[in-house]
Each structure stands twice: as C-alpha cells, then as structure tokens.
Length: 292
Ligand code: FAD
Image (cartoon, rainbow, N blue to C red; front, side, top):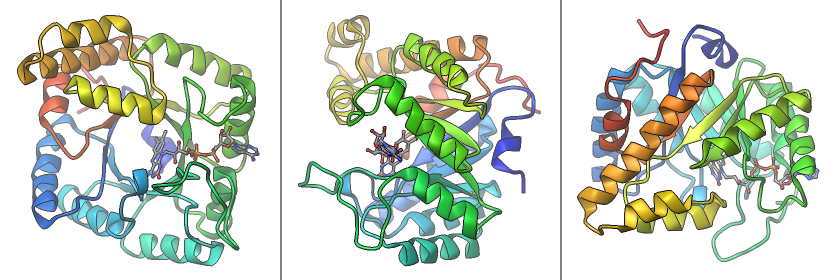
C-alpha cells in the first residue's frame, strides 16, 4: 500500500482519524460503526493510540485489525517507550507488521498514571528518536510519524531545544510530523515556520480536536498544554446546554480546518475520540481538494 510520505505528496489535504482502544465490547462495536461513517470523508488512514493517559496497552492491534478489515485502508499503531525493553518493542513491531499495520506513530509516552516523571524501562529507550531509530533499523517498510508541539512540549526548557529534539526524530528517519492539538492556528503557523528554519523538510500535519463540551476542553487543555483562546471559552460558556457547546466547538474546529486548508497544509489529523458526529459536521461539504 501507499507509503506514509506519499500520502502527503499527492494533491489536496490528506485526512486521517485517530482512535483509542475502547474498554468494552460495546465500545468496540460503536467504534466500528463510527469508522464506517467516517469513510465518507475519504480518509487516507486511521491510527489507534497506545497506552495513552495510562490506559490499557492491550488492544491497540486488535482495534487496528478490525479497522483495516472494515476500511481496507492503511492503519497506524501508536507505540510508546513506556514499560517495554527494546526486545519487547521489537516484538510488538513484529506482531504489528504481521497483522498488516502499515505505519507507526513513534512516541516516548507520558509517565504512567500516578507518576509525574518519565522513567526509562530497564533495557528500554529514553526518547522517541531512539524508537524511530529502532524501527528504521529493524522494520524498513513501516512508515513513521512523530509528535510535534506548536505550543512547546511541557518538559522542554524552551522552544528551540524542543525543535532541535524534533529534528533528531526526523533525522532518525521519521516520514512526517503530526502535531499536538491546538486551538489557535497562529501557533501552528509559527511552529511550521520554525520547523522550516530548523531544516525540517518532512510534512508537518496539524492535529485538530473538535471539542464538544467546555469541561472536556478544559481537561484536555490541562493534559496537553493546549491553551483555549478566551474567545472560544467565552463563546462556549455563554450557554451550558450540551447542544450549544457542541455547536460552538464544532464550528471552531471547522473554521480552523478551512483556514488550515487555505494555508496549504498537506493534511489534517483529527482526534475523533472514537466518535463521528462532530467530525461529520465539521467536515460536511468542505472541499478537501484532491479527493476523487
Ligand atoms: P520525545 O520526542 O522523546 O520528547 C520528550 C521530551 O524530551 C521533550 O521535552 C523533548 O524536547 C525532549 N527530548 C526529546 N529527545 C531528546 C533527546 N534526544 N535528548 C534530550 N531531550 C530530548 N502518548 C501515549 O502514551 N500514547 C499515545 O498513543 C500517544 N499518541 C500521541 C500522538 C500525538 C500525535 C501526539 C502529539 C502525542 C501523543 N502522545 C501519546 C503523547 C506523548 O507520549 C507525550 O506528549 C510525551 O510526553 C512525549 O512524547 P514524544 O514522543 O513527543 O517524546
């Protein structure tokens, strides 16, 4: 199937959707239904997170196997350095390739629940660039995405250091960068310019989360250091009905999307949280040029 880099070489805006492993069978069934609904937007691929926020690491591959069966599209497994030594990481990658995973989103991972600092597993890896290196060495056919931070990673001392570290991941062999979610496109455009200046030439793909209620927006903003613009917070809180907050959040993500396309982004990665209603409304009728 198509390489990850090639997904962004063609015309238009390449859409991808990010899922997470559900905890229940009902969750899996609902995920599958939503994946089918999302197909109308002709995504290039789906991804599934791995152990995010200290969640279970068990079912990422099972989810992707189902999604690939349903969609016949390429699928990407996120993978972190948390809790696995290099042998176990290789083993995971081997199983991933065996079930048909095409790409890896290579991450260091967050500290496990209840801890505040990342600690290296014995015989394991410390930074995402080392995981990229391991994949490139052992699994040449896997496409690799890495994470970028328009508002700077929490632990980085400053923006330049964070960019230098992003460059390390790209130099180690990453095909694309997918960004942390952000609500103000100006943060993304600044980041994109900085990447170019730093000599990062791979596609920089913005990550967008349609927020559907204000509490969720606040929780997520706290978790990943994405500032909510005052105008968005104000618009959301003028009315606390779920319908109003959904409408405001989805409209905001739609405006971000339109503006990003106008600014020539090669693609957009949507954090859809296993749902489809918000994505369907925000993408409805948009011209994602390049689609058949
Ligand atoms: P790194 O790139 O290793 O960076 C971590 C910190 O160390 C940064 O401050 C960086 O500046 C610094 N650094 C990096 N390399 C070096 C180096 N060589 N020397 C010195 N300093 C260095 N988490 C999950 O648990 N599961 C997921 O599925 C998941 N998916 C994600 C998807 C996307 C698109 C994004 C943006 C994030 C995702 N995360 C996920 C969150 C991610 O794990 C955290 O943000 C984590 O804190 C950092 O991961 P990283 O890969 O960016 O780390």
